[in-house]
Length: 177
Image 1: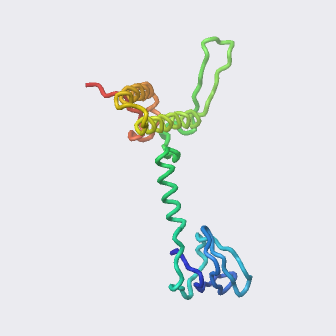
Image 2: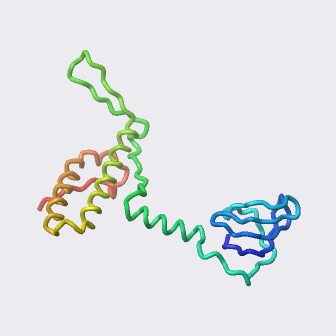
Image 3: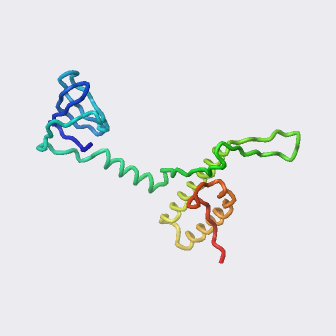
């Protein structure tokens, strides 16, 4: 639904006709014939516009604009976690850690839990890379040297690529020539 303005006449299946009296960030305050003053979220699909008030200025900040800005900022700082699917054959499986000493109990871990930890490690390494590359205090040579260590760490983790459903999510180390 498009952003509505103060003074717009609307209809609601339960409350009847009403007029928008306030445009908040996430909701409209509407005075209805049956029900009085009620706040209805902007995502509500029950409202039907009877008469738009095009004379009133629209809110400069819409939820869509705020979501877009937040998404951009969170992505810039690596706070948005990508959804990475586990390989189908591993779903519902367990990882069994069997000690060499038969007197000790083995440890069983759901593969989904282990996989989640691997993905978190990968995401944090990516954030570390971003922080290194955007650092103002490191020289280009220092950045390259640290980046080589990270690349080697990725190479050490390629064993876990068998867990991933899609190759685009694999760990990639240094390419051999």
